Image (tube, rainbow, N blue to C red; front, side, top):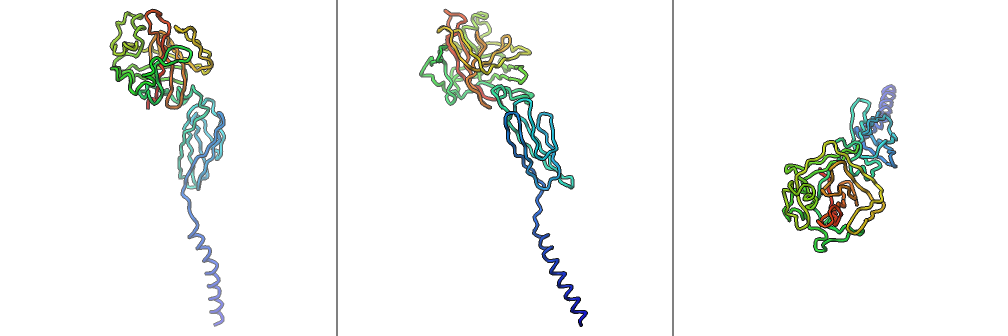
Length: 310
């Protein structure tokens, strides 16, 4: 009897010891493998943190050809731009999970224009028809760019379509980080431009649409240049020849083009003022010489917005 009591006491003690252990195993949560990226950016330097569950290794691809296996790496990019950063985390069984984020590093106006060094297809823009919302208007080529017609300030949305020139919204302009430039004139093979300019150029023989003649506008045949380039200056003291004299635009952004190339509007002067730019929109000042009494001298300016082609 005594032996039985000792045995039962041993069994009960063992059960008491094992019960908490079993309970712990039953209630202990098992987190699935997961990964989240946190980052902070200072100039061209980016710091990353991998917030992971059950991971034992981390592989980073910074989107510029560089990698790391640190859990919390710091990376310095050579160029500003947009980069897809990829984190691959693995657990002890070899299972993996991938997380991707896009970061903007040192985004300058030039990067906004071109898409940066990682945009291998460049960044493409076209004339926006949302003139009223964006504050587009036809201006005098004076120092203050005063309105040429208060009744058309701002221009109504789709203004050029309303006067029978809808094709001007189709042409596309692509800027590349290396300074190259492509111009797509679409199916009509023609471009938006000044009427006086076309008449002076070749007596207007290339004009295919004169519906905007009351405003000095037309659409004329144009063959884009192969291997064209552009020049962007972020801060320039730019003086524009005008019937009002030399008009100064101090400390302004400008765009200029090689050969006969241009953006948006073809006239005697291809160099334009870049007023504002964001990731999706920009507004340009494009000059026009609309007087047959002052050939080649700017009389007006088209202040028009462009949007990114998605």
